[in-house]
Length: 612
Image (cartoon, rainbow, N blue to C red):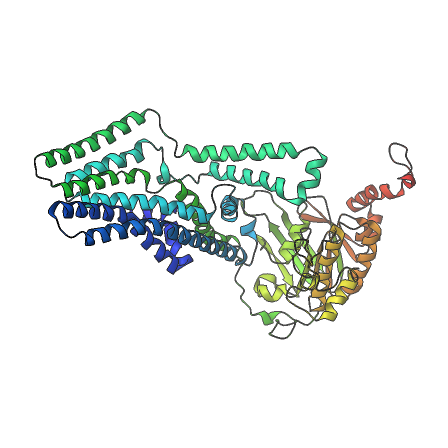
């Protein structure tokens, strides 16, 4: 029972507070208890003052206590709010740090593409943007205010025990009953259900469509602006409806709730009045007990409320993700040291010597986690050291997946990938990745100077400039120009210019010792002529390493030493451009279909291409 209670998201939230900032958390609790106890102290001071006036005693002490309690009630509230805001910001930072570590910690990327973790990832990433509820600094303050009420009600009940043992118990039972009768679940039934998380993800997606620049052009072009706003509003309303449903008022039990509260308070105040009339309860004590009897009602308005749901949900999501991400993104532990690589491991102040690698793929089977679709089914392929291989195939044939496996972002389900005769899984992951340079379709765009975009880990300036020249971007910008428009000294780049920067990053890695270059649609945003010129430069710059090119453009593919056609998880054709054209198979069919665009004199409507 205790372990189940401690596993609740609400208690996980309270456990995170001291981890985020021990000093602020301690101050937060002290102020919370002080604010909760002060109304009872004020009631006691009021009774003391009344008694002093009755008996002609000195008024200095009770007035001092009463004044101190009153001033503290006014002062501690804004102080507590400030502490709550700061503590909330520290909790946000702690959760973001924990999430970042959980995301980047595993050597693979399976945990980031695992659909079973998507909902928790959404909650953990988006909790502080204010779209699904108040940000954390407000949530912490709301939770504090609610708990102050609870502590105040309990403190008043403790004082009321001085009148009669049953009086506080009756009031506590009466006011506590409202939590059960007027709320369907409160925080004690987890609102973080799959339905709520799904609604939250849909609301976030619609919001990002509306505010992110990537979708702006097509939203306007296709008249989707109103649709996007309407979709966001509908999804967010649905989310709020689901969240509200957990704490909505019940209609029929309302009369019972009022009856219980009225009866409980009626009994206690009748007993107080009767004791005062009979002379068993002096006026000063009557004043105290009457005030605290009213104060017990704070229990109904305090406790673990809706704000704690919003604060606890991201904490619980991060706590679930931390243990789940490690195995989901894990790779087989290496059994050899980094020095097992032919070229040796990178050392402090040094670099990995350049050198091409030979790749052998044997019986490769692979499917993504939590999916049934087989990507590779007994894939066999050999890439000689220092050669260039182009990989073609229909969408979904596994071209990008092949690049991920070679970068060892995933391990195959079965089969082997050998590097110079050694199983890739027996090589140190970090050392292997110093030997690989890659440009993916969704390449990295850093809001950093051009220098850092080309060489994030640092490199000699001559290597950076040489890589930019090889990528056709020698005159793109000064090396210290920040590639982001959000800064006074920044600049933005076109899609093609960004792609040249990504190419330069890979080519700079070659100059630093990479022996394998993976290019996944590296020139998709360049025109045909620019693509041909760039690829010639790439082949020249990578002539001493092994290059694997993934592309849909056969004008580029034909320059590779060999071409591999992937289909149904296997290699169906392999050879040079001339060999595959002479064979008249799948490659020839795809090549001829694409070439028709450039050899036809008129299009299907009879218009000359020269006039277009």
